[in-house]
Image (cartoon, rainbow, N blue to C red; front, side, top):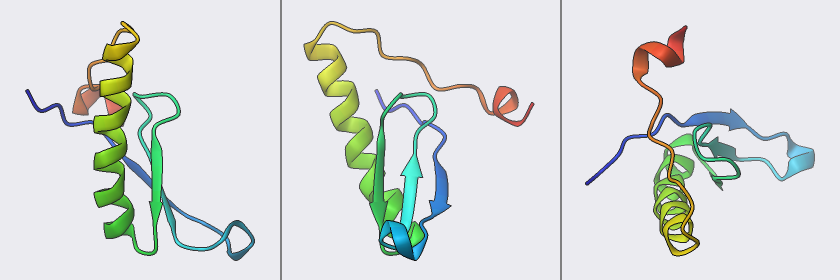
Amino acid sequence: MTLEYAVRIERLSEEDGGGYLALVPDLPGCMSDGETPEEALRNVQEAIASWIEAAKEWRRDVPRPTPPLARSA
């Protein structure tokens, strides 16, 4: 089963190393980065899979993605 989580992309300052940060609001602490927004988005897909796998191993609940309409409210 594939779940689609909302991802927020933020540009990193040069002081923070530049590039882009991809955050998954529904999965606390789940994030990745990349040189471009596209790379950050690709990388965060692996982070999502790892986050879910770890949560299952630790017998923690995996939050369902927030529905799109609730995200924009």
